[in-house]
Structure formats: C-alpha cells, structure tokens
Amino acid sequence: MQERLLTRYDPAVAALAVKYRCEETHHRRVESFALELWALLRPFHRLGGGEAALLRHAARVHDLGRYVAEGRHQRHGQYLIRHDELLAGYPEPARSALGLLVRNHRKSPRLAPAAWGTDLARRVLQLCALLRLADGLDGSRDPAVRLVDFHAGGRAAWLFIYGLERIPGDWVRRKACLVQPAFGCVLQVVGTGAGAARGEIRHG
Image (cartoon, rainbow, N blue to C red; front, top):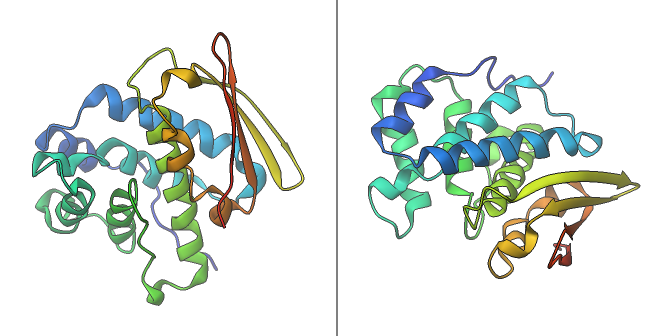
C-alpha cells in the first residue's frame, strides 16, 4: 500500500511564504509550470493528488531560504521547513519530503532517507525533477515563456516551449538533470517561435 503524503492544500504554507517574503510572481509561475509538467508527464508516473499538493507547496516556498542568505539558500530553506512553528501541524513524512524538495530545487541533489523505502523515495525524486524543471522554465522571469505542446512515445518525450531562447544559457538543461532517473524517459526540449532552440536532455 502506498504511503499517503498529503490530502489537501495546507494554508500554513501560504503563511510561510508571506513570512519569509517569497517572491510571489516567481513562485506562482513555478507552481503553474510544475502542475502543468505533472499533468503532461502522466504517461511516465502514477503520482496522485497528495503528491500534487506537496508539489504545489514546494513550488510556493522553494526560495524561502533567500530570506536568510542568497548563498546556499536551498539548505537554509530546508532548515526553515524542518523547524518553523507554522508547519507544526504538517504531517510526516510529508514535512521531511517538503524540506527535501526545497533542498533539491538547485545544485547537486540529495537522496531521500533510506528508511523511507523505494516507493516513497521514487515519488519524491519525481517531484524533485518536476520542481527543478519548473524553476528552470522561469529562470528568465519572463512572462512570455510558456509550455505550448507535449508529445510522448515509448520512453521519449518532447516538450515544446515558446520563448525558450529567452531563458539564459543552458538553464533548462541543467535544471532537468533528474528527469531521466526519475521518470525513465529522455526529454527533448523544443523551442517554438522566433529564435527557437532545440536541445536534448539526458542524464545517466
């Protein structure tokens, strides 16, 4: 039997975002991208509503550690998730999973605790992959960037993005490093519109 993570959206997370002055526009766009990706990648996962709620929470507060310091803000964010009294009623293991998602939204990922078991660890890894990619898609903070289409076939998928060229460097590619180990698919990112670019994201 799958261990249930959450059953609903928790307003305490919104209060936490306000407390630590999370950049609302960016966090809401990352939340929107994350939920779109969650839906589009359904052929490669069996995540349910509880995971979607946890993903929304992580998207809304993934940068809260910037309140402490810009450097290593992912680590500060995980600490705040673990210890802030606003989340005193947040259930386990969801609270630890939320902290891990915040920790893993950038830089080298940290693995889930061995005590969780393979199923829970796999689901959290998939959520980490979605959050990282969603954050990458808003890397330019440009509202023109949007997902326009998606195709899947076998173990491959194609994600079509309008405004991909507006995102600096290889930000999306670096942010998508967990897609293949999490979902077992090779993701092709295809730019649409003027100045479109195309790149293949692989890992492992």
